[in-house]
Amino acid sequence: MAKIIAFANQKGGVGKTTTCVNLATYLAAYGKKVLLIDLDSQGNATTGVGVEKSKKMMTFYDIVTGEAEIAEVIQPTNIVNLFIIPSNVDLAGAEVDLVQIENREKVLANQLEKVKNKYDYIMMDCPPSLGLITVNALTATDSVIIPIQCEFYALEGLSQLMNTVKLIKQYYNPDIEIEGVILTMKDSRSNLVNQVAKEIKGFFGKKVYETVIPRNVRLAEAPSHGLPIYLYDNKSTGGIAYHELAREFLRRNKDSGVLMEKRKLFKGDLDNE
Image (cartoon, rainbow, N blue to C red; front, side):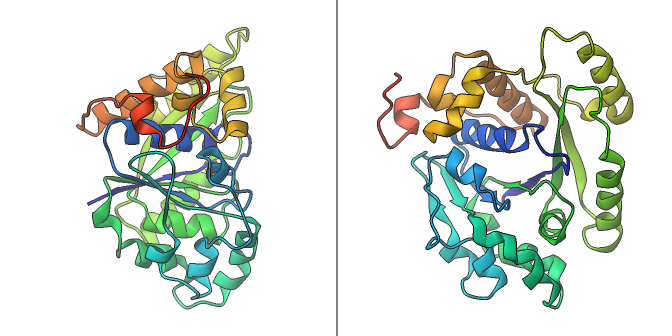
């Protein structure tokens, strides 16, 4: 049965989608069957794995409106072992529709019960807000991964997220836990990085991953090609960092696997081999 993980931080631009997509891809490369759920109406996780957004595609919004069951919304990607519930701009209307639904905070949780025995991991990319979609994700999840940018204002707003998790645990999901905190977008030229990391580790303790994700041009380029970093440039500093993050994630979850070669993982053609 799948372990369900929500990637959440209401502060935008912290590498949340990048981390969710690339960790999901590396887990797929290690032979894990992964379902990626894009819950952000911007659809960046969708395009990040090479799925073209269209108005005709079904999303979580179709589940909310009762137009579809979850099995109808899940689609394969060009990456072996990786499946997705995609997103498009229609999802922006889900917040309004959820308000009118009974047990609105459990819509996603009830749907995931129908499919979670088919996957090893289900990874949800939450929108940069603490609205009803994020509440749905936190109600459905086993744990939360919080990507935090290595900058001076890194902890700004985190108290609100932690309070939301606390309330979710109290009223809707008593089993929710913090899976971990990942430091992202590290700038090696900045003297503040170590100070910020020290503050975050003081707040979260051993929940903070040892692996730190650097700022990297290749990481920024990869989504425009519809490729995760492992397929775009696994030898870049960003690719190496996410590979190490995946290995650390597997160790923490007492899991293991053998890394699949890029040409065996991707169903399409890689012109940068």
